[in-house]
Amino acid sequence: MKDTRPRMPSPKKLASFEPGMLYWEVVDPVWDAVDIYNGGDEFLATFTPVHRSQGLLLAAHWCQSEVCNGGFHQFFLNPTGVLAPEAILGFKLLEMRGAATLALKAASKFGPRYPRDQDTREPMLDRLTAAVKSRTRWSPFEAIDEAFFKLPEIDRFGEHADAFVRKNLSVFFR
Image 1 (tube, helix red, strand yellow):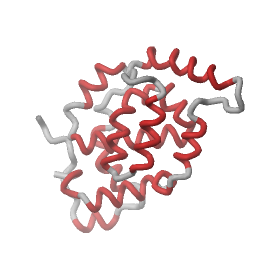
Image 2: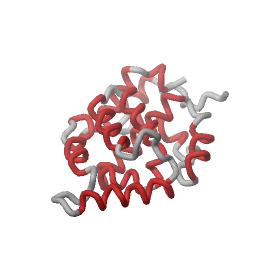
Image 3: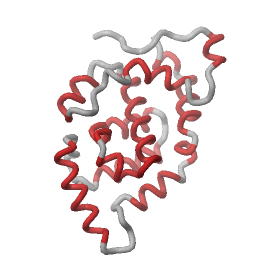
Image 4: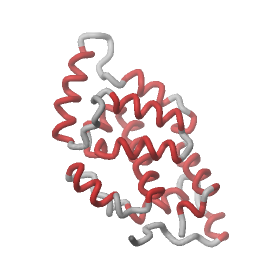
């Protein structure tokens, strides 16, 4: 299998990265290679050849980005929900245990076997939402979202991810 990680940047280039850009150097080469839009089988077929650390960082990035934009409801509703199991592992890799725990708690609402297929997730999400709409919350993930937003590493995800990558350069670069 081909190593998809980028080459190790020179010390000068490493020092020049703006906050949030070092981890992007790792994610960018596989951004278009990993297909999140055509279901679970296609996702796994395109994710598997990617270097594991690189793929998990990509998944953690997608999850935090979607959740910060519209909560776990949006993450699961959109095609990005296909990579929820990898996002949980990505948060663990980045030593973001709080984020991993909350993402697992949110994904667990779909039952013991997480549905990667968006067409399967959507009606399940509708049922989960309908079950709480009559109460004070609009989303079954609202409390989880609130806890997620309070995590310091989520507020500064790019800087946290950069620091982790910098501490583990040989994991993320070849």
